[in-house]
Length: 362
Ligand code: GLY
Image (cartoon, rainbow, N blue to C red; front, side):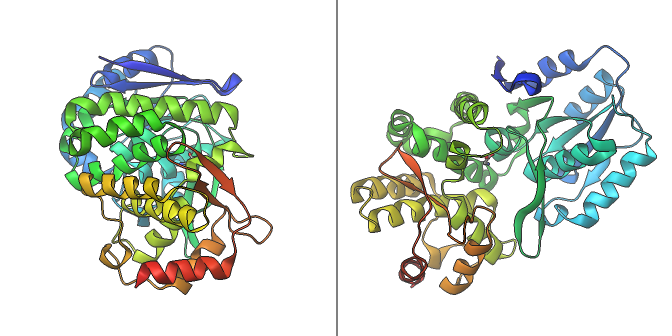
C-alpha cells in the first residue's frame, strides 16, 4: 500500500509517495506530456536494482545514458557537480525537462543542487533508496555539496517536484544503513513526539522490523512536512530538525568517512541530551532513556568507541564553530527540555562546551 503525503508550500507544494508500491504510483503521475528525464543514479543502486531501474526506463522518456554518481560523501563535490552539469548540458535538457535522482542523500543532494542551477532551475524528482534519505534528506528542498571546511556549506533550497519513497529499495540496503536511517526517525520523536518515542522504546530492537518501516517513514515525513510547511527556509522552527546535527556534523567530518551521517546523528542526539542535562535544562532520566534506546537498537554513541575515534575536543569545537548554524559568533545548538520537547539554544558558552566534549571523549 502507498501513502501520499502532501508538502504544503503554496506554488512549490508536492507529493511524497511512501510504501512498497510508491514507485508504480509515482511513475504513473509522471507519465504523459512531452517531458524528458535525465536519470542520475548512485552506482550501487544501478548495480543491484535492475528491475526497478527498468520499470523507470519503461515508464518515462529517459534521455541518453544514466549519469552514475559514485557512492560516498566524496561525490558531493564541486568536481562532481561540474561533471553532472556538463552531462546534463550534453543531453540538451530543456527547462521543461526534469532530473530523476535515484539514490541516497549524496545523490539527492548533488542532483538537487544541479537541478537548482541548471539553466537557472529545472525540476528534480527525488527517488530516495536509503532509509535516511526517505525520512529526511529527500524531503524539504535542502541541496548542497561539501567543501574542506565542512559539510553542506555550499548549496541552495530547491524543492523537489515529487518524492517517491518506495520501501522495496530497502530490501538490498545493508543493515548498517538501516540503523543509520533509523537515527533520523528517532530524531523526529525526540524533537516533538514523546508518544512516538514511548512506542519505539517499548518495541526496542523490533522498532526497525521490516513490517513497521513504511509507517515509521510516513510518520517521519508527516512530521517533517509540518515543520517545512511552517518554515521552508529555516528562518526559525525548521532549525529544530538539526537536533543532534551540530555535534553530529563535527563527528562526521572528524571521522573522515568512517562514520555514516545517521551514525553521527545518533551520537549527536545522545550528546545533545547529555549537554541539556549538564545545563540543568532536561531531566537526567530522559537522557538515560535516549541512550538506553540507542543501546537496544545497536547504535553506538560513546565517543571513544565510535568509528573514526579518537576525536579531540578542540577539533570538534572548531568544526562546530564553522557549522553554518553559527549565528552572531555563537554556536547554535538544538537542546531539549525533555523527550519530545526540543528548542533552539543560541547562547552556548564555548569554554563550557569544550569541557563537556573533553569529558565525553575521555
Ligand atoms: N535535515 C534537516 C532539514 O531538512 O531541515
